Image (tube, rainbow, N blue to C red):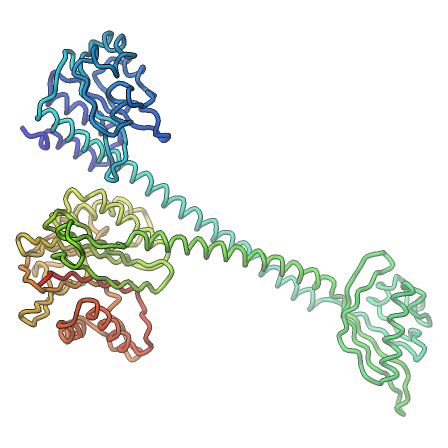
Length: 592
């Protein structure tokens, strides 16, 4: 029985979402069943990168597991500590003789252990995650089959550990992003609510504010005073005001200023309109007033004095100051949110390919058998389109494109989840249908939450240079185009005609179909999102037939010019030169 078949249950545990401890326990037990005289353990490197912690060791003595839990790594720290430190396999055929085991010989003897082979567990980025160790109760050197076994087991452990780390990181990132967006939303709603309340209050105060009305003679003595004016001057009755001037109620400085204003109005015969005046009342409180004074003439036109109306605008002035303070806070919060969105956009763009693989990998770009091109035009800060290009071997490449329903933070977050799921499912990437099925399963488990109405359309191509063919699968996405340059024909890479496979995240455990088409030298494959299908103001739509026609007229051009010409054509068609939806184009050329 092959090791892969033996480890099938481990893979099932991993696919079913079991915890890391459960997966590692099953891995070690399965390994021991495959090697009956062997004892197995997995140690995990802690966050500091300096100590090893127990991951799984079902049949090693508990006192031994307790003793090595928290072991500091180092070049001479036994087999596992050295393997983690050096990032390479360490073989101790006889722990009683190996120099690395000098500090641990008594512990090994008590546990009945004589040989320990340790393989570092590495991530896809070659970062040490822990160690996979095989123990024997007698001295023993590994043969080639043993080396292959421990290497494969460590790789499987690495896949499990990295998958669980990625799941945790994605969940944590999603939760943090949602929390921050929710906090910003609540803060904006609160500020907007407070701002609206203050505006309503200010309007109410202005509408209901009683005005001070007074009349003066040519000597600035009061002839008339209403209740609001009396209360402001500190008088209880009209009689306490009439016949007096402001020197009886205000400070000499303020009274002198008011007298000067009165004389200017009466001398010039011009009104003083809406002058803001700062005043300190009898109670010592400072208030603001909006004052208007106009000349008052008798029946024959002679000057009799002036009429004044004064509005208390103290509350309005205070509210304006508070409004400015709140507006400043709102501007600061908006700037902070814009910075957060800009960072999210940078993260999203960092997920897109920045350089393409070469085939073979040693070839310079101009000699690569496959050449890749793309155009990416998001309509908002955060887009819902995503694509990736990656080598599967020296003779095959994967090309993936997807479109998340909607725009903004939620769509951007889903594209990040898709990318993470792709990394985790690379073991089936040679099979397009299986790859989409795995992505669908992962998205279903995330997007099935109550109230989450979201889905992802996707197309995935595997380009096989050795077989000269393209294998494809589609999940509710527009069919890619196949440009046969030699035959001067553009057609669709057709799906199974009997059905249209649904978008990702819609139907749990859906089995996607795949199909194969031959390739010729010089052929061009084009993947795209539905944002290319633009609608004009009069209801016309740039559809798939228009797309094929536009490509047909440009198939003789280099791929870069084909993509740019297509975008120009769609822009002209829309009339305003703008795109109403995100647009992503990915081209793959088989070198002639």
